[in-house]
Amino acid sequence: MDIIETPSKCHPTLLFKRYIDDYLIITDDRDTLDAIFRSLTSQDRHIKLTRETPNNGWLPFLNCEIRQKGGIFETKWYKKPSNRNIMIKVESHHPIKQKTNIIKVMEKTASNMSSWQHRKEAVSKTRSIIQKNGYTKEWIRKTKQKNRDKQPNYKQTENQTTLAVPFISDETSNIIRKSLKDMGVTARVVELKGKCLRDILVKNRGFENICERRNCRVYPQTKIGSCNIKGAIYRLKCGCGEIYIGETGRPLAERINEHFRAAEKPLTQSYLNTTWSKHAKSHHNSDSLSLTLDIITTERNTTRRKALEATYIKDLDPKLNTKEEINELVNIFGTLQKT
Ligand SMILES: [Zn+2]
Ligand SMILES: [Zn+2]
Image (cartoon, rainbow, N blue to C red; front, side):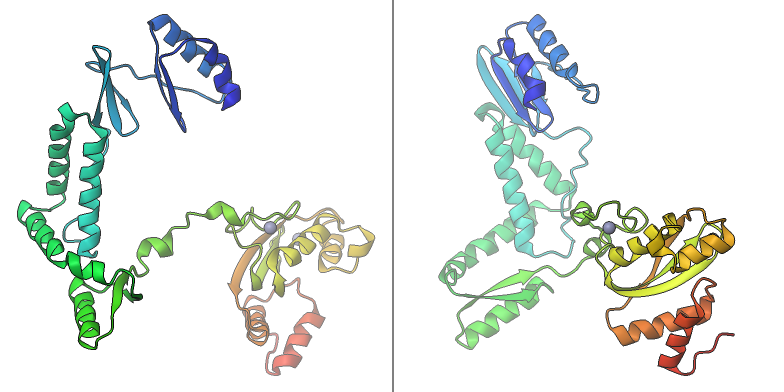
């Protein structure tokens, strides 16, 4: 960012702040501001900035709006108009503690972000969001009351052993707490969230597993993270449509890249004995082959994997697997016959 910002720093500013890709810049006059904007946008053709001007004196920046009035800065809590103000609904299956904490944090943020003149307005804004999500005044009052009653208990057990239980319902957790207490066990019960659909369906660290092998052919064709799978049965398909079924207990990319290298350079001395070299010679005039990879399934147990491979070979009848490979499997499992 230094390279982009430094040229603009020659202009005098009253305030120059940036958070990731959001700038807040205050200058004495408009010309200086224009010059800074031009400078920031002209450093790199890939960086395009848009500009917001104050609305009634208020300028939004991150989660607050700022106004300069009579030489004094005023702030108020801000939510983008596009924000749909959705939070955990009151009927949602979450511990009550979590819901009350969200409300508490929102109220605190709204209040802390706002100058004293605007604090009341901000807090009432949080109220309307909370209500929109189903939390009635009655619910908040009751829960606050309950929490207050429980407070001393919580403090007593703060330094005790912790017992982590899956969250089923607040009632269940309370029964567990009570039972422990009845048995004279001083333990703090905390609730753990179970696996939810999002955990199963969303992968948010997708790029951590990008393969570091030079020229790897596996991850561009499969899901990121497949390169290091140990114990896979795979199908390689030549451009002409013929297929090869294989299995490996090594990291998948190590084995697959060997196949690809042989397929791309079928005339290289060391590859002459491979399936690909032979196939290129017999069907493709010894040209390079372009292969596509599919992972059929994964199985770490070697015996089970070989058995699975044999059934796939029987079902899919791959023309490129050699007789020797098939015979080896037949010997292992006896009954398999090519039909
Ligand atoms: Zn890879
Ligand atoms: Zn082919």
